[in-house]
Amino acid sequence: MLIIYACYGGAHTSPMAAAIHLGRLKGDPLPSLEDILNIQYFDVLATGDRGRVFPVGTDEFGNQVYILGRGNHLQPIIQAVKSGYMLAGGDPRQIMFINTLKGVNWPMRIGGFLSRRLGLVSLGRLVAAVGARRAYPKLAEIVAETKAKCAVAGRINPASFTFRQE
Image (cartoon, one colour):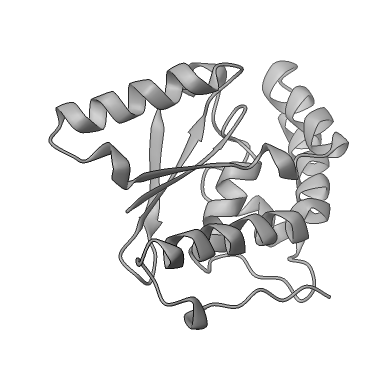
C-alpha cells in the first residue's frame, strides 16, 4: 500500500505525520523542537513542489510512506497521482491519501507564511515548529487512524501499534 500524507504546502503537517508513522518522531508527551526541526522535508518544500510526491520511507509492514503538497486543488491532484501510478503499472486502489490539514494551527500557518512566503526562514521555521509541537497529539491521532484503516484493509495487524496521549 502507498500512504500519502497530504497538506496544503507539504512542508509541515504531512512531513510530521510521515515521521510519526515511520516511528522517527515520538513524544512523551510531546517531541522536542529540535526533533521537529530535524524531520525530513520539514519547512523545506516550496510552492513549485506542490503536486509532487516525495518518498519518506517504508513502514514496518511494508507500506510505502510519502508526502504531498496539494495546494487548494485536492481532487485534481489526487486524480493526477492515481492516473500516473496506473500508467506506471500500479493499482490506484493501493493508494491511500491522508489529509493532515486537520492538524494545522495558527502558529504553523504564521510560521509557514514567514518562512516560505516572506523568506524569513529562521524565524518562520521556529514559529512553525512551535505550532507543530502543539499539533503533535492531533497528528499522532491521524496516524493511528491511518494505521487502523490499513488494518481493516488487511494490510497490518492492529495489535502491533499503539497511540499514547497524555
